[in-house]
Amino acid sequence: MSFQITQGLFRFDFIDHHAVLGVPVDADSKEIRKRYMLIAKTLHPDSRSTASDEDKQLATEILSKLVNPAYEKLSQDKERAEHAVLLRLKGQQASQQPETIELKSELSRTLAHAPDTEATYKESVKKLAQQQYESLARMQAITGELSELNLIYLTLKVGRGEKPTQPRKAPSAPPTMTRPPSPPPPPKVTPVDQYYRRAEELMSKGNLAQAILELRDALKLEPSNSSCHSLLGEIYLKQNQSTMAKVHINQALKHNPKDPKALEVQKKMEIAAQKAASKAANSGKSGGKSNKKGDDGGITIFGIKIGGKKK
Figure (cartoon, rainbow, N blue to C red):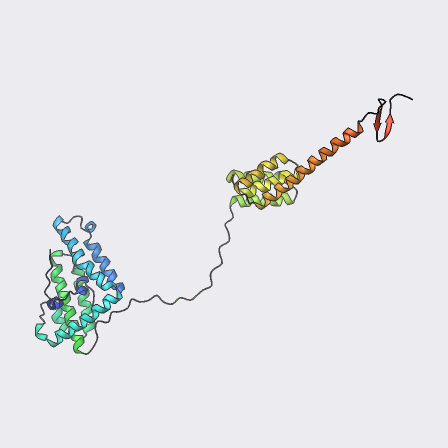
C-alpha cells in the first residue's frame, strides 16, 4: 500500500518526517524517541488484538513504511541536522512563492495570523499528535495537517529572518560532585565465624573441651570449612590425640591445600612423630644392653656382674 499525503511540505516532494512522528520541527532526540515509542506501541499487533486483520496489516505498513524511516532519520544528530537545513530551504522556497501555499485546516489558518507563533504552533502540533494514530483511516489526513503547520511555521520564521529549525539538544545530566569512594561495607559475620571466634577464645583460656564443641557445631553448618578443621586439629594435637588431629588436618588441606594453620599443625605433627620414633629406637637399644648376659651365665647391669658361677 502506498501513502499519498499532499498537504504542507509533502506538496514540494518532500517527506515531512516531523509530521509523520507528530513532533515540532525543533524537537530534540529525547522528545523524538519518546514519541516514536508511543507510536510503535500503538501500532503494535499486541495493542490491536481486537482489530480486524486488515487494520493490523495497515498498522504494520504504517510502522514500517512511514514511522520507522522517520525515526531513523531524526534520531541521529547528524541526520537530524541535515534534515533541518532542508527544512529551512523549503521554508525559504515557500516564502518566495506564497501562491503555492494552500491552507486547508483551521489550525493552519489560525497559526498564520497568531500573535504568538511559537506557542500557537507547539499547542497545535500537540493537539493533532494526540489524534494522529487513534484512527488509522484518518492518519494521512492528520499527518497532512501537521505538515501544513510545519510549513506555515517555517515560512513565518524565515520571513522574519529567524532560523526556526535549530534542533534543540536533549538536556544533559547536571554535573555531579565527585565524591570520594565510600569505604567498603564490613564483611558479614556468619554463624560459622562466630563459632570459630568463640572456639579461639576458649582455646586461649585452656578450655579445650568446650572449644571442640563449638567447632563441631560450626562444621555441622559448613562441613567443608578448612579453618574450623585446622583449628580443631590444633586443639586435638594439644590434647595429644594425634589420630583425631591428623583426621581434621587432612580435611582442612583437602578443602584448602594452602590453609596456613593446617600446614603449620601438620608440620608440628611430623616433628612430634619423628621425635617419638627416635625415642622408641633409643629405648630399644638401651633395653638390649641392660639385659646382656655374661659369659659365665650371670647378668651384667651397668657394668656390675650379678649372679653366675663363682670362680
